[in-house]
Length: 418
Image (cartoon, rainbow, N blue to C red):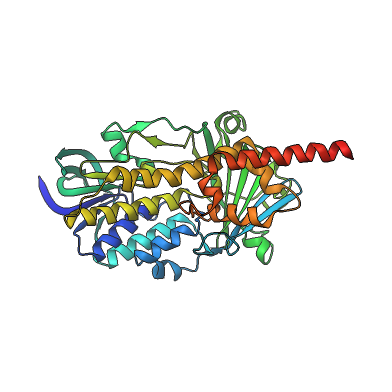
C-alpha cells in the first residue's frame, strides 16, 4: 500500500479545513488535505457573520475571496408580519469587522480550495477516509482515492474539518445527541427575476412565518438567491404529503406575506435539499492526536448564521494549538480548546433556544427600540461571543429571558391602562 508522511492531516476542504491548512502551511508545517467530494459542490451555510473575516484575513485567504465580489452583508433583517427589525454590523458593542459576505458556497469553498492549492498545499479531492488508528498521538489513516486505490497517511496530528461527514465522530464513536429540539430545513437557489433595486434587493432577511418557523432569503451577487425554510421537523414534514421537497418549499413561500410576490412561481435551480434534524454534538472535541472543528463537532441552527464562524474559529484555534505543541510548549486542550469553544457555543445556543421560545423575538421587535440593547445583541449576532465586556455575552443564560418577561409585563400593563 502507498504511504505518505505528513505533520498534519486535515479531513475536509471547507472553510475550517482551508483556514487550518493555510495558516499551518505559512508556519512551515507539512500538510495533507483530503476531501471526499469533488469541488465545486452545493452545501448549506451561505450567510456568514463578521467574526469569520478575522480568520480569512489571518489565514491569508481574504484577498482571493474578496476578488470574487461576493454580495456584501452589512447586517441582517428580521421580519414578523408588518414588524421589521434591522441589525447594522457597523453599529455594535464589540470591536471587530462590520461586514461580511453572502455566498454561494459552491463558488466560495472552491475559491478557497484553489487558493490553498496555489499556495503549494497538497489537497486531494474525491479521497475518502476509510479507517484511522492511533498509536499515542501518531495516526495512520487509510484513504481511498477516486480510482479506488488505497493508501496510508501517517500524521502527527489530525484536524477533522469534515463537516456533516463527521468522519472521526463516526469512526471513534464520538456522536452524542444535541441539546436542541429537532429542527429541519429545505433550501434551493432561484434566479431572482423580481429582485428590487437597491438595498431591498440585496439584504439578507429572515421572515418569521410562525414563532418556530422562518424563511431565509439570501441574495447573491450573481443574480441568484438562496431560499430556505426552517422549522420543527414535524412541521417541515407536514408541508408535503409525499416527501416532495419542492412542494414543501413552495408551500412555505406561499406562507410569506412579505415575499410571496417576489418568489411565487419561481423555478428552482436545483431540486431542493432537505437537512433533517441537523443539530449535532459530540462527547469530546479533541483526543490524543486529533481535534474536531466546525460541524464535525457542534452544529447548532442556521438562524443566526453561526456555522461557518464556529468552523473557522475552531479550525484556526486547533491549528495554533498544534503549532504551539509542536514547539514543545504544553497545551491544555481541555481549557484552551474545548472550554474556549464551548463558551462561544453556549452563548449562541442560548440565543437559538430563546429565538424559538419567542423571548428573543420579543426583544427584537419591541417598540420603541432600545439602541443600547440592540448594539449589544448586534455584537453577538456578528459573532463576537467571547467578549465578556458585553452583558449579553456574560449573562446570556438569563438576561434575554428576564428582559423579555419585563417587556411583556409592561405591555400587559399598557394594554390594561388603555
